[in-house]
Image 1 (cartoon, one colour):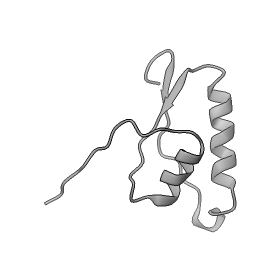
Image 2: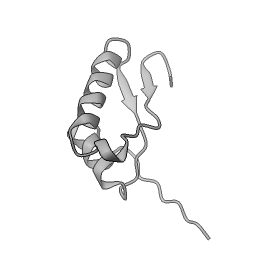
Image 3: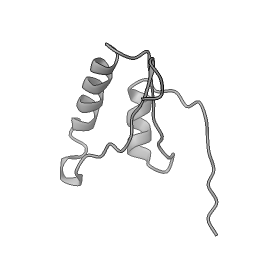
Image 4: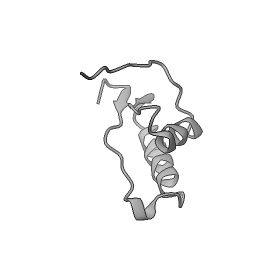
Length: 73
């Protein structure tokens, strides 16, 4: 929980053998439906390199509000 009105969604993963079957979409849609009974908004972090997850969250209505670059030496 971030506050009384905001929640953070973290560490969602669908086993590889179950991907591309709509399970992630259905799961997240249900989570968001249930969450909306108690919270005004949800936040999450996904990298643009994780194209399937990034596209899923865009499809679910998430909007990009920040872009972070991480540099590794």
